[in-house]
Length: 335
Ligand code: SF4
Ligand code: SF4
Image 1: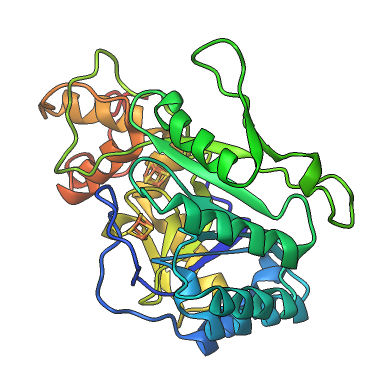
Image 2 (image 1 turned 120 degrees about the vertical axis):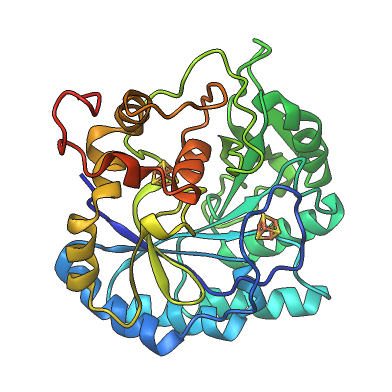
């Protein structure tokens, strides 16, 4: 069942990078901060207490980011991550000023850098970003990395080693080739921050999802239902103010839109309960929807393990309309 615990704001759909795998639509949208603050004021009542920031590149709008951070602090909600590519700054002075502004506004969550073979940032610029955040945050757990891979997390290992080296750190990996122990540490020389433990950077590995247009359909097995654990159970507010029911790959698709920032939180949650596609995603499973579609005679081009890519395909082709809500036709929807 869809039960959001966090709201994530995309401050803008603009970005300084153009990653090949990016699916964010770019329409020069900028989040309405006053509406965002009003929406946040209602969140606690519905046990939505964590707030994260994404985009586009959220640091391209530092004043708006700081204003929202300060509001989150004032109304006593908790911070999750600010997602960033970490290389949006023009000068080190600009970087220091903007990062200081966000921390002065009260931010105490983590800054999560998307870093992998798709982003291909300058390692030296990223090292400057990491050192700057670390020195201003004065917290060994201020930074995280999120790495997207195609088949194997080890695809990013050389890049991670280069990054570790550039900040005088070491990438700690398990000896078994296909498991990475997700830690990246600065060495003893850098351990001068107040807690005395240096910088500790956990790495999350995320398998790449493909869009409906690029889904290969050449897997030997179907995806396993995960009921949207991971990217689910968040209110994802796009820069244009529309609100999606997850931060997954298909979250710009209409069936996942459950309101706008002009709505009350209560209204958005009501919409989510009436949304039959969400019932498939969060309760019955997209595997059950797939079986129901096949029983209706729909033929897929092959199999895919990519559940969010499958979700994107279903939404783009409006396939959920072929079977109606789950439970509508007992015996034909795979339940
Ligand atoms: S950094 Fe993120 S938002 Fe920017 S182009 Fe890359 S994937 Fe898209
Ligand atoms: S399967 Fe669909 S609804 Fe679920 S997290 Fe992925 S994109 Fe979102």
